[in-house]
Each structure stands twice: as C-alpha cells, then as structure tokens.
Amino acid sequence: MNVRIFPSAEAAEAATAALLIQQVQRNTNAVLGLATGGTMSPVYQLLVSAYQQGRVSFADITTFNLDEYSGLAPDHPRSYRSFMRAAFFDQTDIPLNNTHIPIGNTRDPDKEAERYEALIEASGGIDCQLLGIGQNGHIGFNEPGTPFHSRTRVEQLSNDTRAANQRYFPEGKVPEQAITIGIGTILDSREIILLAIGDKKANAVAVMIESPSDISCPASALQQHPNATILLDQAAAAQLQQLFDYEQVDKAN
Ligand code: PGA
Image (tube, rainbow, N blue to C red; front, side, top):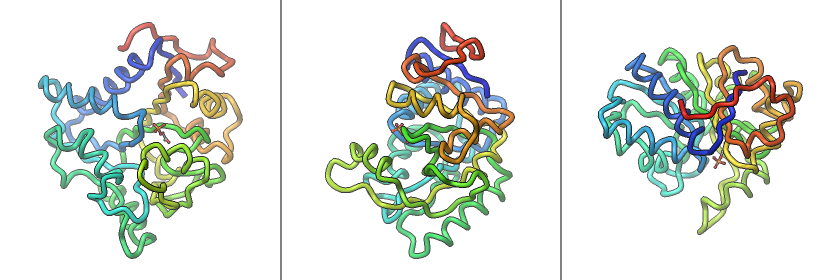
C-alpha cells in the first residue's frame, strides 16, 4: 500500500482528483470505478471544474459505481444514481449510457448483481477504482465478515452503516439492503485509490493499514493489492503508528 498523508482535507481531495484526471488524460477510454458518500462530493466538484476549464474530457470513459440501495428506483432522490447525476454525470460530457450503477428497484436483485458483475468483466475490468471507507472498515457495502473473494451481490447493511448514513435520509429510514460489487471484484481493479477524511475514519484507517489483513476489516483486503494508494488528511491518519513508512505530502500534487 502506498500511504500518503496530506496537511488538509482539501489537499487530499485535490490529490485524489488529480490522480483520476491523470488516469483519464493518459487513457481517454478508461474504465473508472466510482464511489458515493460525503467524502467524494469535493472530489467530483474538482473533476467538474477540470472539465469546465477544458483540462479533461470524460466523453469516452466508462464508469461503474460500487453500489446502490435496494428498493430505490434510479430516479429516487436518495439513490446513488441521483447522487452521481447531480455531483458529476450531468455536469460533464460523459454520456449517461457509459455510466453504470446497479438497479436498486429490480424484481430480481440476485440476477441484477450477476448482470452487473458480468458487465464489468465484459468492459475489460476496472482500470482505476475510487473508494471511500466506512467507520466500520467497509468498502463499497462490503460489511465486516465479507469474504475477500466475494463478487457482486445483495448485502444486508449493518446497523453501524445504516446509522452512519441516516444523515442522508432526513425524511425516512436507510434501506436495509444494497447491491454492492464484491471485495474480489474490487481487488481485480488494476489500480485502487482510497480517500479517507476526518477523525471518524481514523480507527478504520489504522486497522486497514497496520493490522493483519482480515475479514473483520474489509478495507484491509487492499493490503493484498499491488497498486493501492491511500490518501489521508491529518485527522484520518491520526491513529497510525508506523509513520516512517508513509509519505508526508506538503502540497496537493
Ligand atoms: P462517507 O461514506 O464518505 O459518507 O463517509 C464512506 C463510505 O461509507 O464508504
């Protein structure tokens, strides 16, 4: 794992956006794995700004989001499809047909999960997967205890995750299930970028990086990946012990 610690959240977010932009500039047909959540909103704002400034085009990329809540139609205001349209898709030149997110309100979620996994494979696999991390160490909606070889499937959300995400559902309850790509699916990505910001993530970050890789912390699976970069602000890095192993970055790029 390549661990990079930045002086501020803004610097870590800018570096994450820069890595994604470089990926697309190098390979205009890149297949990107995308993530949602509060951590990612500033990253998408930076990608949109880069597009508006003419520094990058997303016209030929293909995207696969990590997950979607079960039961929510794509146009439901709390769906991850709606989040992605507002934050990124509708503000850039990416054709919506190139953007993939599991369908949450399908009659047969298991079949939808199978279709999604097959679609990723048919697209040649993910070149670069963007990840956040849950306070309980989840990546995508792969909750603690998920086998590292897991593929795309329906997952029961933990109480911790539903409580953490309640802030995004002011008018109702967080759904109990989601369709998520698996940890095995994530590990198949050629490159992985994980961004964590803030002290609420500090414990999960320390376990991910410094504890033995174990299914009790899904993100610790990334220790087995040959090209994973972890970008942190000071607060998210606060519980790391082996600081001499990590890159301390004093500016964004
Ligand atoms: P957050 O979610 O960015 O909203 O904290 C991250 C995650 O749960 O993966």
